[in-house]
Length: 131
Image (cartoon, rainbow, N blue to C red):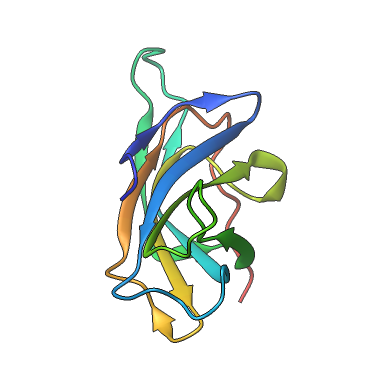
């Protein structure tokens, strides 16, 4: 479970989430892989209150990354759910816009992809890729 719209703070977005598994993992520490693809870019427009939405086709991927999540509760028992957070900084390629978030566990995808909106405005459009 993830909040679908995240405000930018200090050139980054902090995404808080609750990870729920179908069953308890055998070990308390679970390595999750996060894959994000940007589908819409928010670029500065003539109207300062409303950014221009630029559809990205194909979507723009950033380098996947991993995070270890502790599945233990306050008493040290391994559970099926845990709270965690990820930080998506601009200097790692993240931009204001709409993103698809995919989370993989050791046994494959955890649920369906989630659409999240990173609020804010980008000063310029994404430069075209050379092909």
